[in-house]
Image (cartoon, rainbow, N blue to C red; front, side, top):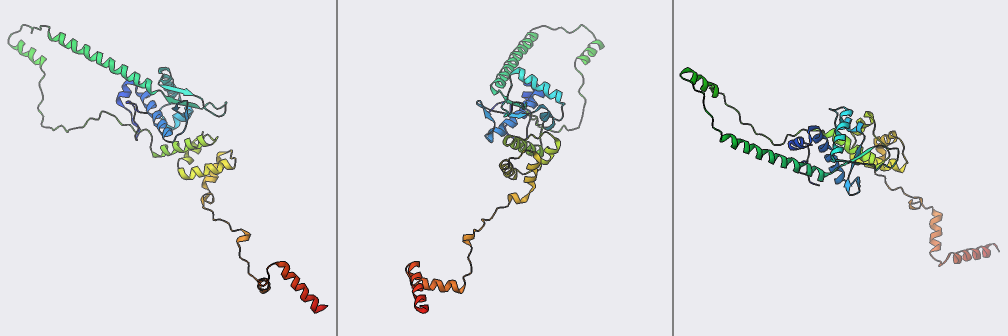
Length: 298
């Protein structure tokens, strides 16, 4: 979904207009949530009731995304966004005791707030022009003065321009201030965390677990999660052992069965096969042998 106040590309940025419309802190939070919603949308994950969601606890939001604020500040900013109707919340947790917060953005509400802001600016601009035109129609008179008094009055009205030979370098002004929020390691951590918590019952609720997952490769992790679920895993330590064990990721060769093995044939086996070639059935062969024995031994 496109929104004029938010970006879809990396790195995560803060729109200067969004900071004016929503407030700086609110703009940072909304942009970060929009970033995670886009990741889930591309992965076709967490889609409920016609919109894409993301989830985390306030503690995790603070530690992994907004470490420059306290958890209390994060809660206050989220609360402001809920009151404005920009941020939506729900509960799609499997277990009733799980209080993990599911959130999404109301993009139509953001657009509505932006339109109101633009209209107010137009009104203020129009009023300012009217005031300037009104001032231009007023007649102003210089105070009566002679000689030095006149010159002093002129000096006060027009300050002298200092002479300078210094060249002022040309600078380009960007209309958008880009502020990186997460680096590659944090991005890898969040992707792997989302993958683990959405595919298993595990919750990465400690720095130790997060530091480990931060270095894991996505393809290997997906395979490890499959094995973890097949084994009915309960603890994070099992998932870690599965991931680190190389034997779980070696392509297994098809094992040969007993019927596929070739056994060495003895000379008696070959002799029996040669005799059997002269008879149509095993019964014919057995009758002939009995007849020969009876003739020889009576």
